[in-house]
Amino acid sequence: MISVVLVASIALAVVLGYKTKINTGFFCIAFAYLIGCFALGMKTKELIACWPTSTMFVILSVSLFYNFAAINGTLEKMSSALLYACRSFPGLLPFALFFVAVILSVMGAAYFTVLAFLAPITLVICDEAKMDKLTGAVAINCGALAGGNFPTAALGVVFRGLMETAYEAEPALTAPDSFSEEFKIFGFAIVFSLILIAIFRYGFKANRNIGKGITFKKPEPFDKKQKMTLNLMLLMMAVVLVFPLLKLVMPGNGVIAAISSKIDVGLVAICFTVIALLMNLAPQKEVIARVPWNTIIMIAGAGMLIAVAVKAGTIDALSAWIGSNVPVALVPIAFSLVAAFMSFFSSTTGVVAPALFPLIPALAVSTGLNPAVLFACTVLGAQSSAISPFSSGGSLILGSCGNEEERNALFNRLLFVAVPISVVSCAVYNVIVAMVL
Image (cartoon, rainbow, N blue to C red; front, top):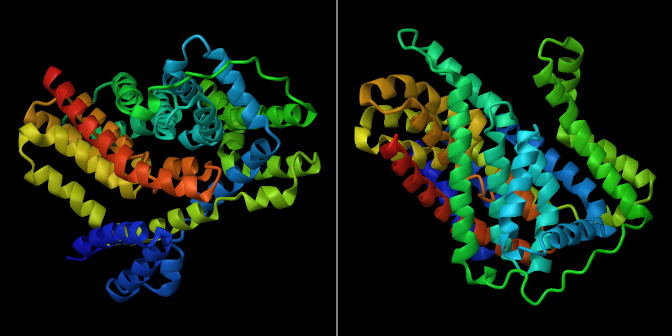
């Protein structure tokens, strides 16, 4: 009963935020307090500890650093350079953005890092190229997720470990090679992403004039401050990427492993923010004023309510229900939709995959389904709702919007257009894959 109330409260918070134009986070915090403390008996300090400090800090620190590039024109110059590079095929710009994100993710950049780097640039490009911002957001989100599924990339390594753990719990079953299984997921994700981007690219009227009427002039050279800002951005990417990559190449090196464990994109961004301030790359007052506090409150408030749902056992109950009540023919689509639903409110790597992966080995044997398909259905299903404004990626895209009116409009389109289209398309795609394999 309490799980039903929690799910209803999350939905109600979204509806109230949409209708009243009051930040959804405030409603979420109020519901978390009423349900957590009075229905579940949580202590007030325990509830306050559910405030997602880490997520809030990363959004704050990354937005602070990239505000320098937005204020002094570096992002605008970078977007002009990418537009100029795509001058011969402007209509394929969403796919170009997708592959840039894939490359960064395959190289080892975390999902959040890729979006932190590309979101501000992409939204500026959308303005200049007359491209729908929702399409640009979907393109880089898909690229960051699909590339992350590569067996040696950030997400791929986690999923491989969870697969191996799932089979360790079933010693009677022979475990498949996790590398090859994850590589299949990577391939499935690339194909689905291209299909989804094509749906947004060619299905929306706003994209029919991409690049038309635009004179693709060679961008002006970067000025001194812009060059320094660009160098700082590249250096920050290098710092965030180098040690995790070295750890993959030399897993036995204790020094590299120790340093890699200390690399955090939020803390690194704060260090580079200090450097940018010392170099006077933009006024401090303006940099701080551009922090997306509205987005931070929304994400943090939703995080508190979701944490209460996890404590109430809502997520665990959902995963257990699948294993005992879903007909065989509907298992792939069930895994896809349930993973999407769970991911909408929680972390794919922290909650969804750990909850659903252990069900797959035995279920694959009893149903005769390919385990790789079920793993892929789970991962792709979970990632299909990652464009949600309540997710870390969706929130960062919102935080990159130039003004509050634009941010509110994109919030509604992410929630009511991008998420439904992505989730339904993914469910259909997963059913087809399950039928073929």
